[in-house]
Amino acid sequence: MDAEGLFDTALVRRNRLRALTGAPDGSDFLLKLVNQELSDRLATVERRFETAVALHAHDPQLAALVAATGKADRVIRIEQHRDMLGDDAAGGIACELELFPMGEETTGLVVSPLSMHLVNDLPGLLVQIRQALLPDGLLLAALPGTGTLAELRDCLLTAETELSGGASPRVIPFADVRDCGALLQRAGFALPVADVETYTARYDTMFALMRDLRHMGMANPLRARSRKPATRSLFLRAAQIYADRYSDPDGRIRASFCVLYLSGWKPHESQQKPLSPGSAKIPLAAALGTRERKL
Image (cartoon, rainbow, N blue to C red):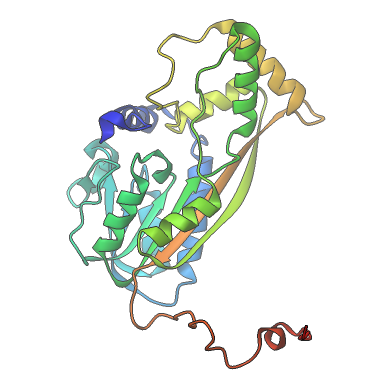
């Protein structure tokens, strides 16, 4: 399956391992923001889970935040490589992005930040997670969505088209929020919710943004990426276009990160069910506070 997928998951693993050891302080700002948002959302859930999984969370941050909410008795980390587990290696699990290694109905909670967008078979992974969740178990996930790095994509595409008459993919495609909500439903989750938060980062130049992306482990992992090294003239022209189109009055450029937040529950008889058609006790017009017109 991976051999024919959109993403080179072995390259994803290498990118993340490189970022784990070489990233400077502050380059994980987006991961920290997302981890905090996921833990804040978990804190509002009015129940406790015996076993939680921090799925491909890059480092121990998310597991610690989940534990701090008091919503889980224990947190198991799952990462792409044992080196990513660090001090948690003894109790953690190393597993490829495409697989969820927990047994059927063994897990109460799964939380995943900024990883699911790199899975070649996301519907299949969601089904595996739903099967592993206990009845009334919860999935919370975050992944970059449509609009993420739109400025960088535009500038690289424009520059390469100007210089060579064509362009190769240099920024990965991102999912739409509506598509993700539909995926949760298709995978069998109840009460699916998908929403988006947009974060804007500012940089001195496009090159500073690209350095941060490498330090986040977000270098281009597409199988269809060009194997020919990009020329210096391409990046210089793209940086010029970026400064012309997406800079603020102080000269700094903007980079958008549109993060999709997903939640879904393993079906359980105690959950709220939608009413069947025709079973409403009051007219819709009355519920909405509007007058009913008869034609």
